[in-house]
Length: 319
Image (cartoon, rainbow, N blue to C red; front, side):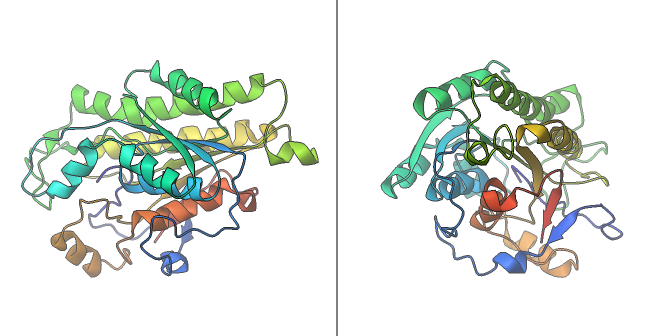
């Protein structure tokens, strides 16, 4: 659940046109706050990571900071309804602030600050960029990780296959999901692009070599794919829309030196994975493992690095 939950239902094979990156390439990454290659040098860059108080967002903030970027962690404390089938650890993670993440980054020698912002409010988008610029300089790395997660369905069901509570698909569930995952994500991309163009001079390593008028990275988190996301229908649709915005950005912003990609994680344990979910993953031939947030963050750091300058307009499917 959360930023990018792998669809756990049964499907007749994976027919999506995606780049599949075998997670075995990252299986050696230890369970540590900073298990990241030092070659991903992001010194001098400024990152904005949404949904950064826990899970993949928090791991990504730590990762980018460990690579030298200054990081603004945007987050919103969420008090979820009690659900006996969702571990209390996950509810606790979602209602906590981002202060502990910032403290861990600073203790390790990194640079970070946290800002609580409800992305349903469109005014928060320029506000976050203003805060980052005032403290660190222009944002040139955007990680669209936040979600307005809600489990909803077209069926007359009150619970999903794991007995977690479901809501009927409605205007309210649509608005909750699309306001954050799609509208806010698109507005964040637009804000990065607008400010990039308005800068009096190019920023970033590309400017030093006259290879492009600037440098930028847009990385989003997704799940579901073209076959939808049964039992989280609005989540899947909102992520599909964000994918489309991001792919458009990859082509429209290429001449500005900006790359844009989406990362599709495997089942990632951000606190919601139960023993039953692990058994389900073990039975599925298309799900190879349960990942740690740090493993997904390492891929995001790679996409943010100069090493990934030729990777744009892709959906990176991790396994």
